[in-house]
Amino acid sequence: WALAATAGAMVYRRRMHALWRESTLRRPVLVLESDDWGAGPHAQASALGAVSDLLARHRDVTGRPPSLSLAIVLAMHDFDGTNRAGGRHGRVELDAPTHAPVLDALRAGSKRSVFSLQLHGHEHFRPQTLVASADPAVKAWLAGGPLAATERLPSHLQSRWVDASTLPSRPLGSEEIASAVEAECAAFARITGSPARVVVPPTFVWTREVERAWAAAGVEFVVTPGFRSTRRDAAGLPDGDEGPIANGDRDGPITYLVRSDYFEPVRGRGAEHALRALDRAVAEGRPCILENHRDNFIFDEAQCRRSLEELDALLAGALSRHTGVRSRSRVGGRRVARKAAVRVAPVARDRPALEGDALVRPRRDRRCTGPPARAAGIGRRDCSEPLMNRPAVGSAPRDAAA
Image (cartoon, rainbow, N blue to C red):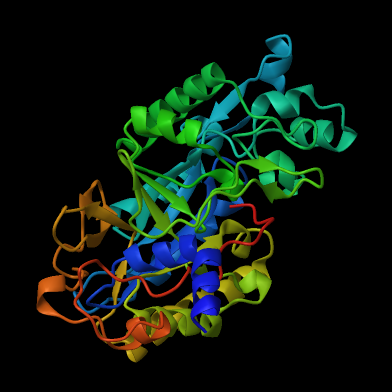
């Protein structure tokens, strides 16, 4: 048994280390995050209005409405502008008149405190890759103009931070990364009126070099599925995984956030699925961070209605099953003390919005017992470090277009 235990510890040492270092929360926290909104189809405007109205009807235990974190795309391809520029990429940004209905809806939801905007990307693709493509389908998509839907592109071409013009993909050069990050962060600040503090990498394919550029531009948080995919393989699937990553992990000025499960009615993961994920997270003392995408709401009216009904059921169910639940915009380890527990709190408008609400149970005041410790196979002991009980549940699918 000793030999088997030692072998198991060696095999799973990285995961066990990740489990051990994640902190637990004192109160239930539900975070809803939805990706891909912004520049693109005008159908988003009415969908955003409906989502905003629904969120505003609910209140958590603090009396505040739920806040949906929206990862926004800041620009779409300008076909005519590219032709005028002799093949150099042209773009129509989110604050252009073309996208006014969508931007107005985003701003209206933000004013009601039901939307919290975070950076997804300048585009949901690498512009140079699409402009140089000889694929007739890609050329037709580009010709569709700035209201086209990026969901219609091949999955591997939706990755922003690799060159997927050929597969396996190739890494981008340092100068290209630095220039692109500087441009997207400047555009986000201009369009939203706030600096980019939180980034959701498109399709969850990015590299440490991109992170360093984000950090230099003032980004503090990177949302992950619990690992970092650094390339696309020969089949076009995310590959080169680095991790595991735990909620609150830090690399210099960057703090990582980890999504735990899904709320995707269009993919059969509706309110009941999400509520089971919330139950599990509450039992483990972890935030429940749910992933969602705009395609649940914008491509089909009947599906949009079903998704709104499921969202309504999720919020009502969360409040009835966990009366102390806080619904927040995003979760991060904002302050990490060297010799104290980590304070894990949402970041809303560039400040911790849950200070005191989701305070990690201080190690000096408790023993590591209960469901989290049992789930990790750990008995009673002095809490010399915060406890994480197990890896993120239901991390993003290998080919999900975040």
